[in-house]
Image (cartoon, one colour):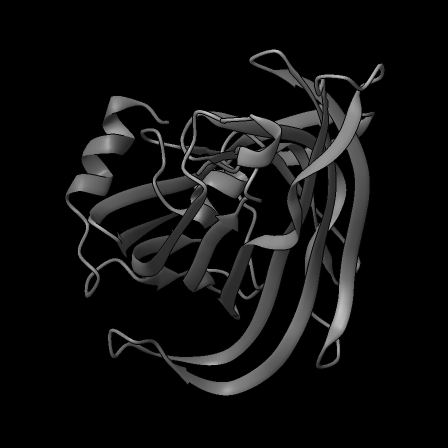
Length: 267
């Protein structure tokens, strides 16, 4: 799975020397839920199905997208976690109480079936949102060829501010104050056309009924940033054997991962 989401060697060494006890610093007085100063960084333990990795996410520099200035996020290495993937090589800017994301996004079903699209000021967080307030929603249709099949991909991506928590205890036992929970979902439908003997025209068929292939919860703590995320990525294809169609990916798949804040430094 990827959601298009690196540093000098000196900064790499600095990260390597950090510990969660000694480097959880906040020298600024901002009430941001994602401080966007250059050089701010967060490291995450990524745990899931047969995965135990570490992501290092940081604010790199200013970048201009569609005439607007954003803070560009990067990672030290190719990220494993959904959240770090979401921000990696993309831009984030603050507008009022909202954090807006622009750049490239996508997923890879069965590790061989890419779905890529573009985000333009997608709201990933809103400090003043009430519980269950929808923050952003985008829908579109992508036409792409996949091994000779003309696919139509209909997607809807949404973000919702779920709730505000005065105190939140992460599953790893860490306690955080002033936490806001956000849910991000990606719903996808896939269809194509096939040729059937004795029928003189292509027949439309649905490969995958509309379903949430990504469902992710992110927890943001004031003056720190994203402190915990849990994400489920799953899909179920239709049985196409009666059409003589066999796609080179499993008919279903599911994985869950968690991202735990390990160390961070923000200004």
